[in-house]
Length: 165
Image (cartoon, rainbow, N blue to C red; front, side, top):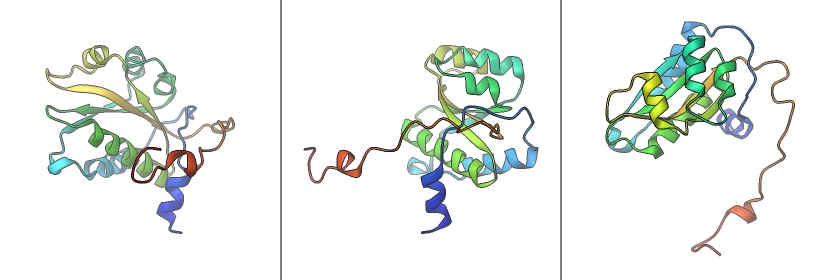
């Protein structure tokens, strides 16, 4: 199997981060991978808000229910859907960010911002834009990943052929 395939299988959400900054070159590399994510009709109907100020990250945590990784990570990359953007494309964007970060030694955790209006206010989004998701990013703390949440459902439980049975 290829290294890419193995990376996909081992990717995990990490919720605890070291207290050290991400070098600008590494952050830019992750953002470059995000920039090159495919999108419907190549519209690229997204923007990124990089949040690295502690007070701003704290304000952003109020926009969701399980947002402590944002406060613990040195950076949160907020994924902004531009007008006529697709949530499917935003999901692709999140996965590319997570895989790119993993490839260069960074850890990530996807975050849902359940309260769009708070996220929009904190990020000062123009009308018509929405930020529903963010990616907490940093170096995994030495204790990160110690707790495991079990394996995966079997393919027999997940896969249906020709109709849902």
